[in-house]
Amino acid sequence: MALGLTLDDLSERSGLSPHYLSTLENDRRDPHVSTLVAVAKGLRVAAAELLAAVQPAEARPTIGALYERAPPEARAAVTTLLRLVVAPSRRPVKRSKARA
Image (cartoon, rainbow, N blue to C red; front, side, top):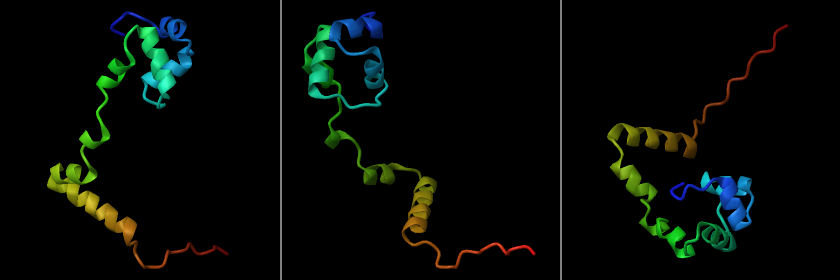
């Protein structure tokens, strides 16, 4: 961390457990606004500073845009996969024969 704080240090400052802070740090949880305020208090910054680096959803590329930028072989693979998911083969599933 740029401030040289450990999770334990930030935990003491923010009142949040080190485990919970770790889940936030590793992007495994989405924090509530009150959690952002507590973390900001622990870091001694404004809560707005924590949100300044967050990319708004509308600025993220759409699936269509990602598909269009993908190389032709990746697009072909995605198209094949989608065809298999949407219209699976109509052939009957082969069943194994029981052995006597």
